Amino acid sequence: MKRIFMVGYSTDKGGVEAYIVNLCSQLPKEKYEVIYDWPTMKIDGKTWIRPKNRHNYLAYRNFWKQFFRENHFDVLYYNTCDIVSIDLLKFAKKAGISVRIIHSHNTGNQLGIDKQMSLPHRMMERSNRKNINKYATYLLACSKSAGDWMFGGHQYQIIHNGIDLFKYKYDLKRRDAVRDEHGIRSERVIGCIGRLDPQKNPIYAEKIAESILKKDSQAKFVFIGDGELSDEVKSIVKANKLEEKILFAGAVDNVNEWMSAIDCLIMPSLFEGLPFVLVEAQAAGLPCVVSSTVSKEADFTGVLQFIDLDVGEDAWAEAALSACDNARKDYLQNLIDAGYSIENTAAEVCEIIESVEK
Image (cartoon, rainbow, N blue to C red; front, side):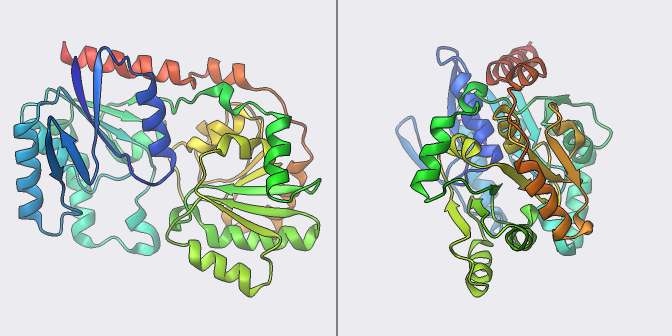
């Protein structure tokens, strides 16, 4: 049995976490044991408490060197949204881990928003991008744009964000159950699903919601997710006395049910890789209005409408309300043909692991 150290899982319920959960659920348990990178890890009877960050680099480095020296792993699978740090790949190589995979899930760096990335960070990113092949044995990306951004001119392989497609199929009973639970009747409902952080642009999403409500006073808007900007967005909604119209579901475990309950999904993100939520939405046949910063690779069904961020919230609101009236269609076969079943994704990852070892 091969042991995989899986990096990238966290308490967030975002796309990377969903990818890891979906992938690991399909890896043959008789062939692979998955150990997740976690603040506290118990491995072979020993408890490991990893450093929270790299601020004390000496302690950070010593921990990971000892960790990889004392624990046997056949594979390091490093899921990441940036390339500022590839230390774990370096430590894993020095420890003799033969299969070292880095998987890009983004097309931009959160630190780069509002030009916050410092010169040292930019230099580190540039150096890591140049030298990535020295430490990783395989480069993966969720899309071409994510691979081009993270790996520059290096060769990489696209691995689709596979999901349990039939779990997301539109279901009228689920729709009615979620709407009844939240006091929603026949109103048009627009949703924004994802972390409430700068990359996802939730402040702008709230402005779009206000414009929607001005155009249709019976409509409702729901944020599904949580994050660092959650309190700020809620404060804006409260100040505008829109608490009954703009709902906050928080981080939920039933995103698939919400996909049936809402009528349109908006995504005004500043940048993305290939958003997991858009794969899920298309499996549900849910109309989507998304930022033109999102890769066109994400549209395999024709339900995505791309809009520039600078056209203004009124244009976004009109597009969302119009999309609400589009009839749902079954696109599951389109997604299967495009390689977005989790079974296909898991098979590709297993093939990569075995081929690298050879």
